[in-house]
Image 1 (cartoon, rainbow, N blue to C red):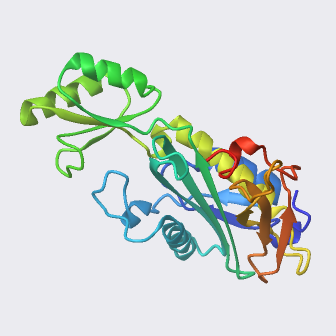
Image 2: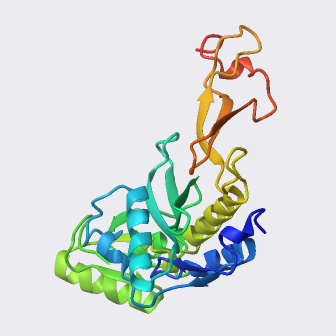
Length: 284
């Protein structure tokens, strides 16, 4: 339970989703905040963008999540909303590894408060491949954890015509593949990254929600508002051999998302120096 439950306790919290994310989000939020989660049946978040590109996302993930909250608030009249937006691509630090980046935004209109978090995970099955034969199809599907994880088929990568989504059984997969190959000569098969078709992504969304709850339960030392979280890091942990600054984390910066009070925590990993192996001077 939050140290300041009166901000949220007893209120309705609308989860802005059409892809069943409430399955992992609602239990955590209700237990931690004392809220009652609701999901509007007629909320269409796809108007803000789709993973398959039929509707282009015109804003960055954070702004898109904010817009989802606003749509849910307008639709339900709730003053408390939460939304998630995911992105998939190369890991920002390890470019050759695919990553799942999940943004969560909690908007409280009653207290003019916004709390955001970002979770990046390498635990994803995000992949796509141009397939010509059924043997290739089966090998790809098995590597993508099908049928537990859904697949999408289209004539070519990026094609907006003839997209078949939400495939979750072998008969449907073969039918869609044969139909696409007959019409186009090949089929581009990719993982369906919508949360309801992707248990791996759903698990990352759960992790992100846990992270959000932890930040909500951390209050600003100055104004006592929930949401006192890490907003930046500084590098420069000195090398133990030559004392030169390294790229390792020296400190974490915590900032209140209400009053902007900031606090620095040095040596968060309980290390005062870094091994020379990670020093650009000692090990260029």
